[in-house]
Image 1 (cartoon, rainbow, N blue to C red):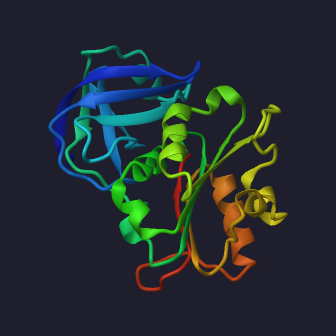
Image 2: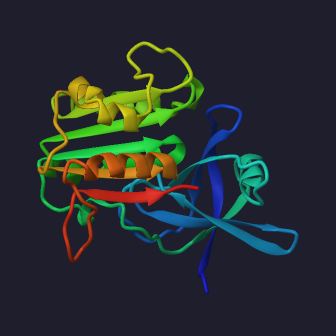
Image 3: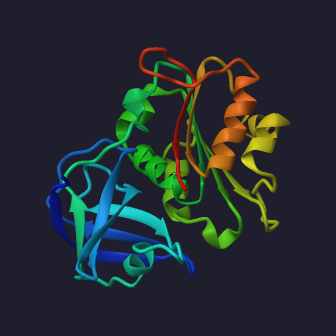
Length: 246
């Protein structure tokens, strides 16, 4: 049975009509960047909970989650109408293996996200240890339109701080935006345009972390397996680590 902490919303950001971030003050235990927590509200005398990746780091004084409204969902529409000082519940432990600690030794780290799947990667990118481990880090962030491309200021700050080590490539599939790739991530890996854009090859000295919808994860995995790369397991180290968002 889950152990619940009582927290309060201390900041709310609305990115567009359906995308939100909440910063939550609570007495949370340490966690690893890339992990997720379960967040809950009491609705009609029932505690409704769902997992959300943490955007903040263990060094921050708050937990931050990033989510989209699922119109038919029991929880996300309620989260979206919370305001500062409203009560919210969080499990006292984080879970998940989409962490740098699980990545075997390699030269380049690729982070591929769709939608809110970028959340855990933002947490990882804000952690100092990741920049000491890899020669180059590439973030590919795919959305349908420009309004969904959240956390741009934060990503720009990372680009500025690690300009020789970090490459950011936005993929915007339904709008023509300068500097954004128009095709899906899978297609841009298959035709080589993604690698050409960042002047880096996806090879045996790379690790690819993916978080987002199943179509992206399965498509990219298939494309990489054709190159001889394989899924990573603790007993059998590989090149691909994934976390699926429904």
